[in-house]
Each structure stands twice: as structure tokens, then as C-alpha cells.
View: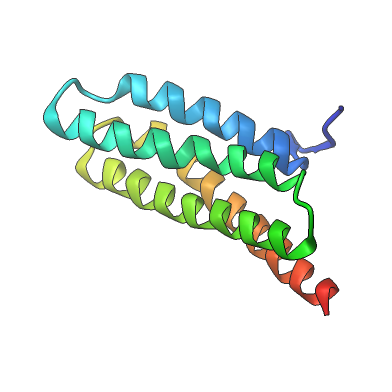
Length: 125
């Protein structure tokens, strides 16, 4: 499956969330080997990679209600990931210039997921 791109942005949410998961894994490898680094690393790797996993799972939902439910879980995971990224940014566990693009991407993914949930609910009436 090919992804549509415009100005370097991927418009396939499945591929985009997958690439985001890759970025999260790479970020975790840069965290310091400290108590804080390990604790935040464990949390963000779970939430950051589950965004895409839930989007993939939603593709096989049996009903529109199930689809909305699973995408909503993905949205919750994205918001949690944003929280952890903000903590990493503010505590400077990793250089802030490294975090900014990842933080920007999760914000865009959140907006996309909100739109998917809203449109799915509207089409479900």
C-alpha cells in the first residue's frame, strides 16, 4: 500500500502512526540510563507504540461502534504520549530540539484521530 505525501507529510494514518512508533523507539534509546529515564521510557514506549497498534486493530472492527471505540483508545494513548513527551521536553532528559518534531507529530496525530472519531460518529447516526 502506498502512502500519499504532500510537502513531506504522510497522509496515511496507519503509516504515519507506524513511523511515529519508530520515532518513539528511537527516542527511548536516547533517554538517560537513570531511574527517571527507565520509568518514562517504559511508559512512553507502551503508549507511543500502541497508537498505531490500535489503529491497525480498528481496521478489522466488526462494527462502526467497535471501530469508534478502538480509535478512541488510540486517541487516549496519543494524549498520554504527548504528556510523556512534554515531561521529557521540560526536564531536558533529551535535547529539546530532538523532542520538538516528535511532539509536533503527536499533536497532529491527535487532531487526525479526533477528526476520525467525530466523522465516524456523524456517519453512524
